[in-house]
Length: 347
Image 1 (cartoon, rainbow, N blue to C red):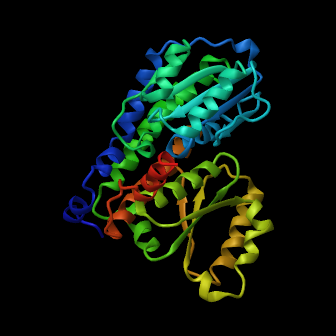
Image 2: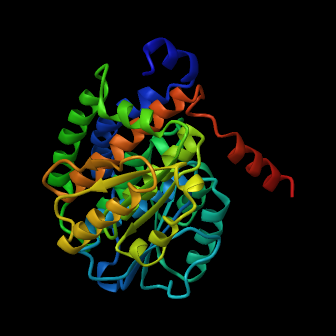
Image 3: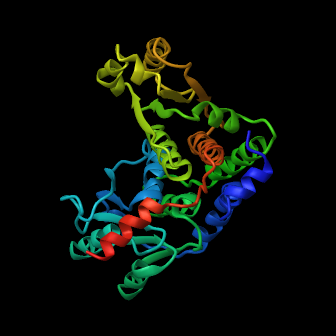
């Protein structure tokens, strides 16, 4: 297992401290969201479109996971240079860009403004904040200076508050309070010498992670695990959801054993998963374990959906960190992303 000396050798930019700070980040995000003045014409909102990329866009997915069942209008997370065709003056268009300089998000912002959508921006600054202030639009200013993937609380909480103040959902405050309490427990457990996150990281070493969860509220959690393993651990990872994977991907667990043995499946489980989906997960596990190592099962914690979703997300963040250290890599570095950004700037 990684010890403190190993962590110091490879975590030279302080990713562990950012992960450990996440419960308190949520606290600060709630206070910041409370202080931001927000006025939208709630009577005219017929749909919501959240635009962003990467570690910023995942906030849109996570909030949909937590409140989607409350929403009575369509809600879309847009990861593109353009806007969906339905975006117009009756759209609440929310832009999440940690840096404020994400080119896809800026292009989508321009298009939403041309279509006269009601715009709200969540950013630490950059061109997005500059344009929003010129256009007298609402801006949630969040602290800068860290990787976007480590700023999920700063990005997600203002988004939840925006939906609340637009009269689209009930107040998220009590659920966020429970979430903070649960995450403090996850943090304490993950700091022990032997803990679940380290054990999972050890089992993922040298293998390709497949993250399986139920569709709906826990699909974004699988997506977050996938993204964090790719960015922090510098390993390819993949995710899919039940019941859909039982209609296609399951056949891939076929006779080519030499390939199947390279994968490690992780189940993200929640006690309120549909009973028929739970049965599917059991049957699928029986198939998988004929071809590769036993499935790793992780259970959500908490009462409210916010807490259950974020508890699994937070554990995944620790797993990806410990896996990076086991791989003897700096979890913060993103050379491939930097290469693409530089190439885009020069073209």
